[in-house]
Length: 73
Image (cartoon, rainbow, N blue to C red; front, side, top):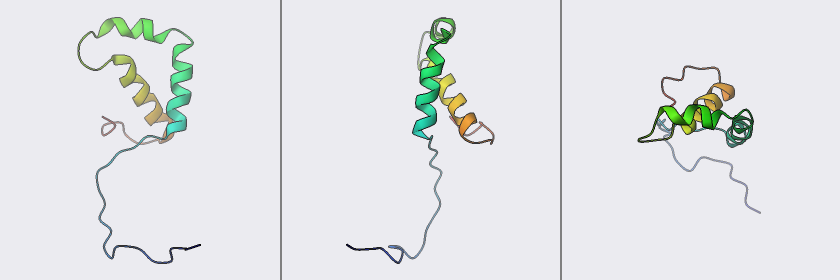
């Protein structure tokens, strides 16, 4: 078995990637449908990305970390 003891690169550069924890997204998806939110919010936006998926992404982002949601999009 090989154990990595040193970095593969000498210079680590940060990037602007944003990710969401999968467990929080699954929990939000399961709890979002129980009170009937898809039927309530689905009628307000017809074109483009579904409003329900945007709301679920923002809620899961807010539950995972307590930072601003301005970069969550």
